[in-house]
Image (tube, rainbow, N blue to C red):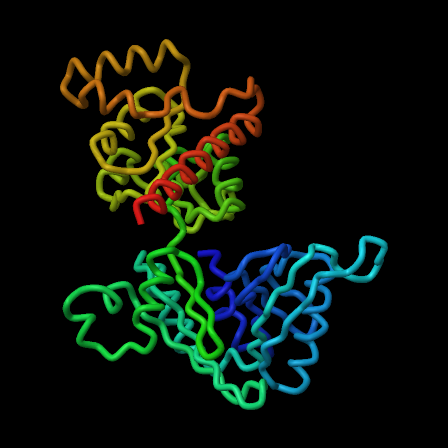
Length: 348
């Protein structure tokens, strides 16, 4: 997975690092609370704090923290005049937590990464011990969702329980002087049936869009790390069987772009009755119409079930090339994902 904490766990044994996280903002700022960047003695390693002047100033601070080994909580003002060439003019401020000893919390980070890999969300709690506005100690803990809610959870002594519930329910970090509560969720799962040219391009864009990408194909010469290097998981077996056997949740997005109609049909049969967020299938209008008729006639799906499939797949941008087709599919995935997330927020 592409979570910055997974990268931290990979690098922490070999490099001295500083983890910088925006914990609060006021007014306009180039990024929002919860974004993080990882710095080594070479500068920015991964992540972003928004780029520009603020990130440059944060990098300078991080390099200083590498030398001193001291963590800090720093406020960056972004109120410079528009004529300034050296300062940010967003008109707000950002408070950034610099963890100069992330190795001290390696076990917590590993526990969180394991939970997210198992698709279990939770809260990363950072407790900040301040003396005269200077950090004396940072401690971190990982709290899974099951520990936050429910009757058994109520019996556990979790500090800041109500704020923890607030962070998880809203999906937004909560920061006070002594604690920073950061909700962490698994990436939406993008399943690509078919590792041909379109599948490869969709896998690449899906990676850039922060999906957890699984590619399925029965041809090992296509389904391998050299062909789809950004895939988090590669499954080499019968496509229909693989989709039938895999977990399918409300956060699963299935893109069917196999090499032929029969493979498309097998993949669709394996998921059309499931309660996933998205199913899209490539093909002409005629192909889709014929397949719809067959599915309903043979009892493989109901008409409403088939009609929720995005087919032909992708937003109509008059795409012609493989890359354009992949962009149209990716745009539709983002559109649906945002609709799902907005709907969930509206229900909270």
